Amino acid sequence: METIRNHTAVHALSALAQEHRLAIFRLLVQAGRGGLPAGQIAKQLDMPASSLSFHLSHLKNGGVVSDERDGRSIIYRADFQAMNQLMAFLLENCCEGDGCESADAADACMEGQDA
Image (cartoon, rainbow, N blue to C red; front, side, top):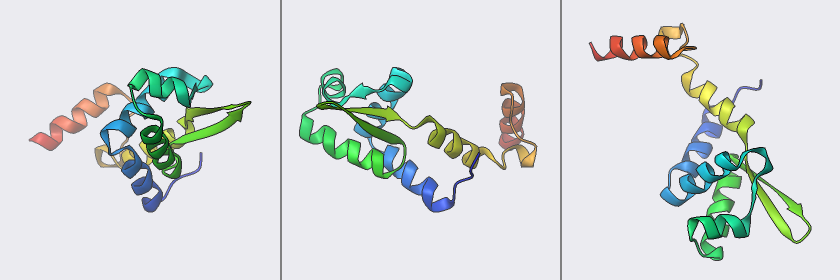
């Protein structure tokens, strides 16, 4: 798996750091690999098309959402590979470099930091 750089992580996190964009991304995650057409996203989130277009553009530019034309529709999908890379980047040095592969290891790591 390709590793990401600091600036790539900043762009991805910046794209998600807004309430509507986070809601869009979470909806696309729930939709899975099939994604959703823009009209359905707008309807489910009760969002005007112009606002949705603005937010989807930010998510695409941040590298966390992709799109694909399907006839007259554009299907948007969460980029799971990009998010997995982002999560790996954020956690690569957790637990003093031992990694937090399990919930128990992560809990132990966090408990040690609170002490």
